[in-house]
Image (cartoon, rainbow, N blue to C red; front, side, top):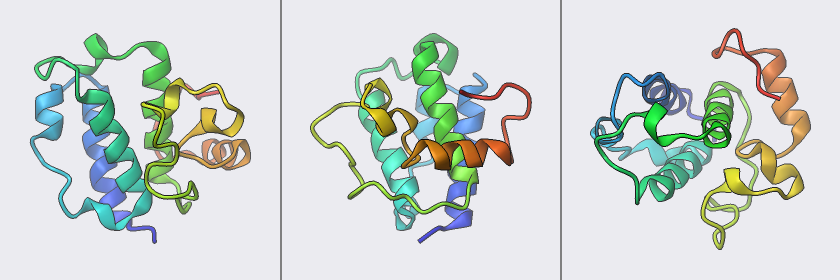
Length: 135
């Protein structure tokens, strides 16, 4: 089930974090309780939680993110603005691996999108991220 309100709320919080205007602590200061009704939101929040577990809480995105991780979070932001169901099995689509953006396994490289086709279609009609396009 797509919950546009939940997706918009997480997208706004993530966009502000990616812009370097909040710290990791500030990102998590508005806990995602209640966001979990949308499976896509739940999966992104879960992955962000696992990724950030060992990160400096007072740091901002530019200090924490390498290019690959930034690309992954930007893809998550595009996904949150798309009207697509989260199609990976379960919330943790690959529970034995730490962060889906580090995968080099075919379609997993476009996570949280399920396929390259979904990702490219969402990029063709962006709601956010005007300017630079992800490839």
